[in-house]
Image 1 (cartoon, rainbow, N blue to C red):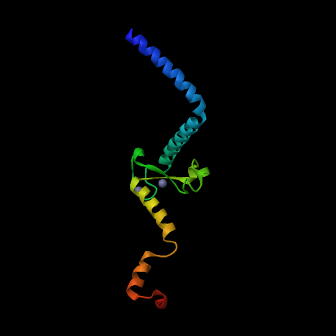
Image 2 (tube, rainbow, N blue to C red; image 1 turned 60 degrees about the horizontal axis):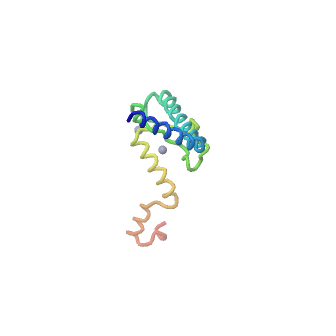
Image 3 (cartoon, rainbow, N blue to C red; image 1 turned 180 degrees about the horizontal axis):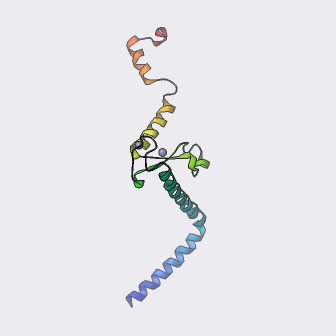
Length: 128
Ligand SMILES: [Zn+2]
Ligand SMILES: [Zn+2]
């Protein structure tokens, strides 16, 4: 009896969620395909890079490598699933890349070290 009741509830639950699924199917499927594509590319890249980090060249098990997008996804969403825009990096190199990328855009105007020397000299305009 208990089991029967449970199964009925279960059946209703499946029925309800399948109606919901139909509406959101396209979104779910795109996401699923994206993950599937990324996983597939990761395998290909892993073979191409022979299991090594793209920056430091250290051998890392496949689960330890992360996909880095050379041109950021926010900059070029169209390149998100393009293999030529991907490189596998170990977590520390991956972090370093993003840190450097962020730093590059920040320090393009002027170096922070210049500010230090101007403090000492008093007037950096005259020294130049
Ligand atoms: Zn590395
Ligand atoms: Zn990245």
